[in-house]
Amino acid sequence: MPEELPAALPLAGLRVIEFSHMVMGPTCGMVLADLGAEVIKIEPLAGDNTRNLLGSGAGFFAMFNRNKKSVALDLHTPDGLAAAHKLVATADIVIENFKPGAMARLGLDYATLSRLHERLIYVSHKGFLPGPYDHRTALDEVVQMMGGLAYMTGRPGDPLRAGSSVNDIMGGMFGAIGATAALAQRAVTGKGQEVQSGLFENNVFLVAQHMMQFAVTGQAAAPMPSRISAWAVYDVFTVKGGEQIFLAVVSDSQWAAFCHAFDLQYLLADPRLVRNNDRVRARDWMMPLLRSHMKRFSARELSIVFEQHSLPFAPITKPEELFDDPHLVATGGLAALTLPDGRFTHVPLMPMTLGGARPGLRLNPPTLGEHTDDVLSELGYSREQILAMRNISIARTD
Image (cartoon, rainbow, N blue to C red):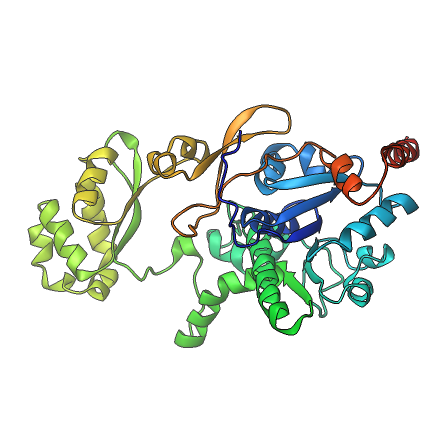
């Protein structure tokens, strides 16, 4: 069972209606839900498609839909659409991430709803913010390719997407940031507003450091595998037994500590290696020496020494190994969770604390339509009306 958490979460008492699927919109809803909002996810009768994805998408629903309620409605029937409008009338925030025009055809767009509900905050997640590209269909990988991230991640001539849905997730986070900013402004003005978050613009924000590198130096940023590092030692080392470990030495004081710890005083005394920038220029001949020296140690031995001397290091970890990470386990960074199919697992929580506590898990990812009866009953629908709506929708689906 989810752990009981204090009632005084910052967004407690707020209602969010989420019309979204995949990752970007659901991430926004998850953030708001983790912070205490009541998030009601509107799903089609067949359910959010991410419930049934295979491969790299198999974890989407379980990850991004915790702490939410599921209401299944057929928005293409008059009764289902009417129920959605009634729900919106009770909401503080509406979230959507459908193609341009989709919500307008249902009368669920901001222009329509804002005339009826002046205080409503409407968070729209799109592939592109309004402009020449806004008619295009965007995916995380699409914007990584056109926004420079795949170029920076891969080797020269081999663009490679990042190993996570970074733009979808971060775009949803910006949607949530915009929603909380709009809430703060509503407290002053009494009026809601539309918030828009763009997948492409999010990607550009991620690579902005490389754009600014060009602006400052006049030289184009090289892809990360072939970049000139700002740090002299900032590399993955293959060590004893073929293990790999990431080791970093990023300051002059760390260089001294590193050389003393590994009996490399001759390098510490070398006048060609006095400052970090000197060592960056010397990497061509310095790094082979260091790699040869480090090979005599195991990854565990190196970890112990680096930790003792407050030097940065990292084991090369696979995602599935994080379930047993001692820091995450000890600090409550993983919450017990029951999947919609009844299996038990753990899920990472948001990477922050509020008042010293991690916002945790109140609701498991819902089964499809798990809360439909309760939520519609709260709106005044009778059991007979709810059953009739469901039967009409099922008949329409068939």
